[in-house]
Image (cartoon, one colour):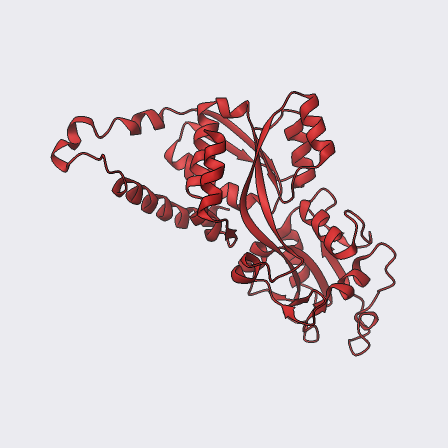
Length: 322
């Protein structure tokens, strides 16, 4: 995600200027040589390693936050892995990571595993995301899909082999399907909302935890159909075609910042999260990173094409970690 570095550096610098302007107790310019520099050296003395893993959907936001935080705190190393929401929770509940990226809430069995290890955590919603259903730019026939049609395509016992099996007027060409792996929170959410039961899906599709692999596969095949987070579509809008979704009310809605935020893109809009180990929050570098993440979340989230939470939500989360 290095391509976001320049943008985020500018945002970070702008945020620093704004933060300075908002400090009513700031000394006058002629006093600045005496006492204004005190906070900066303390912040730069932070050191250590912060381990993050989990959802590929949340990865771009956390990676952007990590890059900017490390620029300001070169003594801290933030590693951000991508093993899917489920894979991330396995590491988190075993005490191997400080923070877990998640595109769904933690499950009861995962919470139980954490409790067994004595791990307490804070759940923090960081953004809204919409699952995008996409086809190749070369696909000229798909104008929209209904939830019923998506279920017909993706259910475990699906008989759909060609586009003609979906609608008689579409070509008798084999559909090539792409989607997240089974450890992905996006896979779980999509199957629950579309098929009707989480993790129930036809198995004959190209699966990957790396959304960029899915983008490349779909873009290169005119008979492809796939799904992943909205941000990855925005990054690759020149290669892919969004499919509007009709939830059953006869109105097909295309995902966008507005339709995801207002909930009209249903049923595929959802909140996404980070989970923070409370014990890890006792380490100054972890607490400082999470605080930085939340204070800069609106800009970070928008810079990587997600939809921010309300300001009150971020303030509520900041209060949780204090």
